[in-house]
Image (tube, rainbow, N blue to C red; front, top):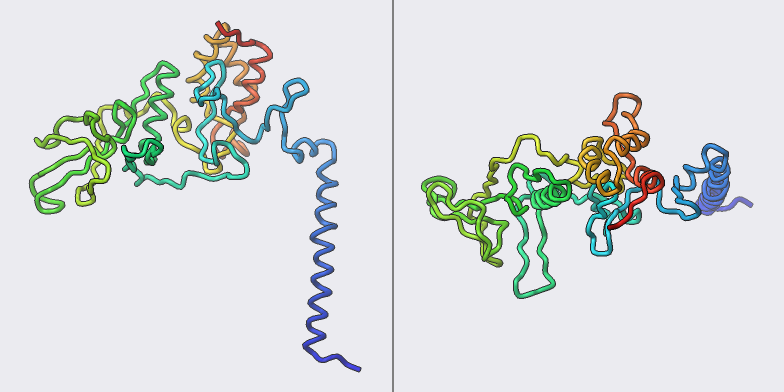
Length: 296
């Protein structure tokens, strides 16, 4: 007795489902897991975990913060690049900020709500990070289009005829009153601070470059998060910037610190892709071992 065609089709589909479930859902994962345990592959397969003594302190593939409980940088350590993954370097929330070059205007905090901190634009995040790194490393943290207090130097310029004609009003969009605007006048018109809730949408958004150097002292990877938010490495330029501070805090020479940095610096992928990079966790662990920090 032949089964109806629709039943035969369903039985064939069920058999295919069962076979593929066993092959791809059980056999294949077990084979890959077994291969991953081969000497030489096991360390990477287990997450490239790094130990200090008997304690696992992180992974050489995932970045982490070197800060105190309040989020302040620990001065004896090299600092990682910023992270937008969860609360920072969260492998379960790997992501970028998704903010682009046009993100220059902050959402101001509501002064009536003490828990509202507002939402900084990408520009203000870059400006504030650059200022903080500059202060930490003792260098000029200024950048183009940033104010001296670390926010985006952006004006809303109101013209008589919409986008043309004489300027009638100017507002520093990222400086909430009673802040003093970063410039007092623009084209002869007094610059105002911004007020939460006011509508500035009819103004022309105008970033002001300022007199910061074309090549800031603070490297770009010190002020921008990576696409994954998990980068364990920093640029050689950012490591060089931090070497003096770390050497001073650990009571050794800059040359000694740079020797350790060079040991954990990888070259370009395949010899030509990307830039050399420094693994922050491995450098910090090597420093702890060779030049322990003694707090004054």
